[in-house]
Image (cartoon, rainbow over the protein chains, first blue to last red):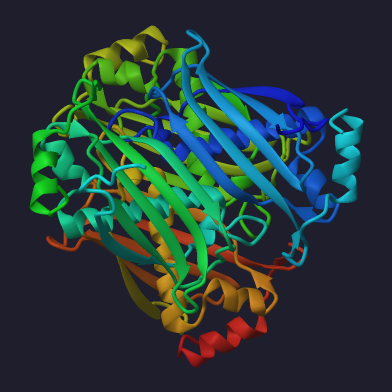
Length: 147
Length: 147
Length: 147
Length: 147
């Protein structure tokens, strides 16, 4: 039987709202799938502002955090002008990674429109992959009760 | 033991070349992950032209084929001006789906930069999901020796 | 001497706020110029909501209003995370056109970052240019005291 | 009477081909106006390769060349899959500027779809505007018979 690690399941959550732009809609009159990385990015920004883990915080500590995996599934089309919301969840892990899942919903009906998952790793300024948790990130996890 | 179905493993392949644009590169000086859906789209277009399964063919037969799943993994960063290639593989399935996998490589070194997978379903013009293979798609599979 | 027409100088104004996204910044670390059409579009949307002249209102009356001219000048670079605002001004004209000018400012300092101008015309659903003011647009101008 | 300066009218030309992507088309089924900055960028890249004045050449000499003005006019809609071409013309000027005009045409019919104009200036690596022609640019103009 797999032993549950102490940080498993620990999560932090944030949300942001958006309304699909005319230019994000394709000639099927639904939001083009390639627009979703933008919505996920907006959600990471909102998370970063709420919990102080934004791009500039990471950069100022000497790192980049590029995406290495991205998955999304579309449940129901988003359309132009629909009032939407992205709920983003940070999933604690012992590895030097940032793992988020996403749910996009229609704000009026709470219908689930799409789900997603991204994994980010750390690179130093010379673009070398960092295998151990950067010190600032380790402290951030501690400060947020994640380890 | 799982029984191998007769169409399992049947594939069709196409390729297209691209060079990341300045505007597709972010302030980390690497290609922004949100640009990859464009490269995959270019590959589907190249496939569509080669095998006559493009957006307009699908549309003229009365259907849309929206993406419902997209996954990609980044192995090594693409940079501005790098000579790249997308290899796209169609994977035959009995379901009313279009499944592609993708490999993006540096044309000069053949280094693997990213992999991806997309799943498309069929919707009729009233945006209803179609569960059975549309007739034109069934014939297309037959004509290409996939079933 | 040029005779001043009665609608000259009549204007309507709206505003919207935005913060440049990470992905809108290029490898010079400034907002890529090709992102500005998005900000202008957001401003037109804000105007459309405030004065009931949005894309869907135009569409529901049987028309498209494609852009036929766009001009912008950059005064000072916008950067990632800067708190910005677009001020949009509608300029009344007797012609069957929608003319907007734009000013993008840093919300903190009120520094002017960019100016722009767009001209839209009307096309019917068969994509034919419409030379006379559509009835709904004529009424909209009257209702807003523009003629 | 205006005196003609010796470099007036001296031009260099290049071209590149493109086919609008599905994702560049909006729900009016025509190419979204915000896609044109990409086509113009592709043309500048083609020019840069042909005449050795690309982004990296400028950067390696210690400069950025951001756009400060952009104008475009749409004559006829481009649509998905249309075979198009951008013709780009460099216009010599004594100022420390890079001025291009653009014509986008349907390759099959030579119909003019859009025209454009961009102006770039030089900034040093500290983002200070450079008023005099950088030495490398002055030499480039001389080598190409423009002054």
